[in-house]
Image (cartoon, rainbow, N blue to C red):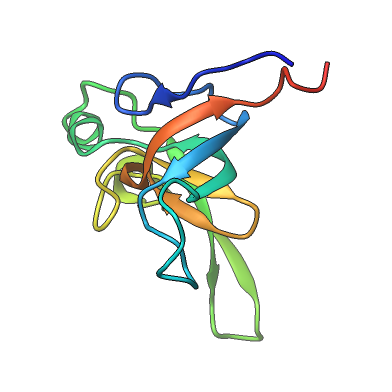
Amino acid sequence: MKTTKWINASKELPPEGRYVLVHHTRGTWIYPEDQLGVEMQVARLVRGISIKEREQMKAGTLPDPEDYFLEYNGEGRMWEHKSCKRSRMFHSEDEYSNNKLPYIWQTFGNTLYGQEIDYWMPIDRYFE
């Protein structure tokens, strides 16, 4: 079996969309007596935009493309497609509010803030 080492997430990130094994810093959910180091999940990185990038978009030094969303119009129970500049839209993967980094980690059924992952390990080579 090929051996792979843990990679410090503050120094290097995996390619966006690639599932990796991650170690999170939130602790376990059920048993407070669990041993240290068992806080692992499979997740993938989803990039957003940073506060600095958002300001650069607003200032015109970075492209600020149109972003689309659905809005309920309240009349006839219809949803309408709306758009606005990306700098005005906030996504869960963006750096804002409780997410202190411009990305999140998506697991199967859950989302972790960027700062909640301290180490990750590639898993795609184990099954070749």
